[in-house]
Length: 528
Ligand code: SF4
Ligand code: SF4
Image 1 (cartoon, protein in one colour):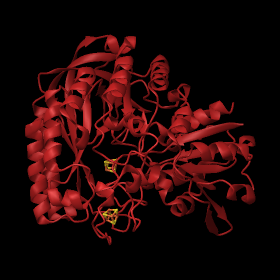
Image 2 (cartoon, protein in one colour):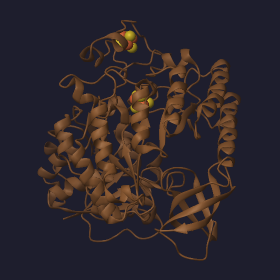
Image 3 (cartoon, rainbow, N blue to C red):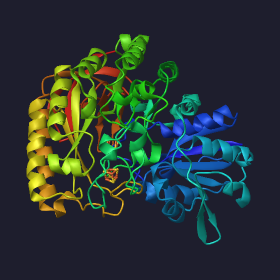
Image 4 (cartoon, protein in one colour):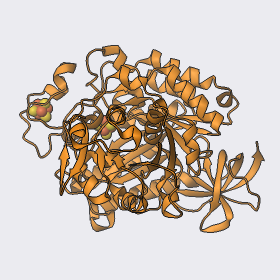
């Protein structure tokens, strides 16, 4: 039996553009479950299949993606002629749509580890789809029965110890074309501690439990409003944070570096939640502010990772992903700066309006977010700040405040503004609101977009003349004389004019100009 795992995340209609240099952790987690059952598994990117042939000799197909990737997932499945086709990842938060629109046989809903293990035991390990009675006994599934779709009971989120027991595959990283230069995500923590609820559009009884209750009380809202920021489904899908122990994370990273990886991102909805769950165990960590970060656990993890020889000689880099402003104390910022200076850190701002942010269930206020940006910058980090346009509740007033917040973020040290369009997600509090139109269709959203572009261009211009270390990825498809390179630690895509084939090499480049809001030009000054 051989399983083919197709990574369709962010592949959209078939060509991944924006996030080509990012490799998510999910497919390797799935491959790890097959490996622990002595079943061979390979990972391949959706684009590779759609621009070439589907590899042969596999008996089982697993595709993971998001709702926006349904067109490319459907194309992948239409090429498949082997055994059962399964779908997983964020796309299955609407399982019926995921099955009907992609042609897959089975959807794994929410956390997939236990569900997949039980499916293998029920017969999938032999390459056959278990019969309907067997499927009905497995939680967290949706499957087709005749012309309808049947769902089994939702699975409760898996406990920390169980989560920590799964070992993601590392050898399958070579299934990704750009694994040597891409940011490879290693999951260190799953779930989110923000159990505030959105007060927008619902029938909140103002009981105050989700903001002032005990950790256990905050878990459930009496009227069933999903936890977390209104536009986000992380707490609904994955529950409160659960951290992996540091030695397992280190072993995984060391193995990835041996395979040739150079850039690792410690993946977590909020890195500063790392180890906080241990401070309140066995209670669920449902407070985004108290207790403060678990400084000891964070330090142990980061110091052990920085001790890896390739980190010490700076031919590889570790970065973190997102953090919440509510946890960016002076001490937390200093701790991050001690180990990760010069690397990016993403911080959600989303709206500049205090009132709007409270209504949406955000864990921190705009003022706190500005303070967090300032602290991180002072500690040597490169803050990337996230905003969303078209959110439910957006008004002329919130747009004014958001444009101002973008300008203030830059003043406090934001290196880059990342603007998203509001997308309505199943299992989030805003699931019944329509997704926002593109910014050009709404005057307020357009103003937010223009403020973000202006700030980003200014930030790129300030880089001209500086030297940054990059990993060369591939030839630029729009100009074959140029190479595309990604900064080892942080920064925009760099285009380098070079006849030499330097793919996979780590080099220093001087930034010579700004090509666009996202791209700069550079010339090599040193090679390693
Ligand atoms: S959202 Fe729910 S838990 Fe929070 S105050 Fe309202 S009713 Fe209470
Ligand atoms: S947006 Fe961030 S802080 Fe808010 S619920 Fe989602 S993961 Fe948590």
